[in-house]
Length: 104
Image (spheres, rainbow, N blue to C red):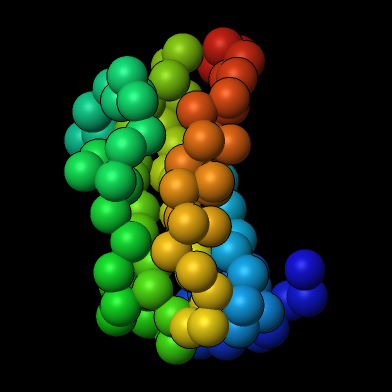
């Protein structure tokens, strides 16, 4: 994946036009940031992918913030404009396998 250097840190990791990116970020703990627990399943209802969600990115995107083992995380799916929507489903399946170490 190449770094696109856009106006948005997440969009920097956008895929080629016919591909998908799965980006995981971690935020420092903050009382100002309220994040719910990790979803039991990363379904299309929990993590929808729609056009115009990610600034500076021409394709569709979706995001879900969550807390897992004391860590505040965000998962982003970026789907290139020519990519089949089935790639978003594959990215959700990969996300389901994410294992998080406890916060130290």
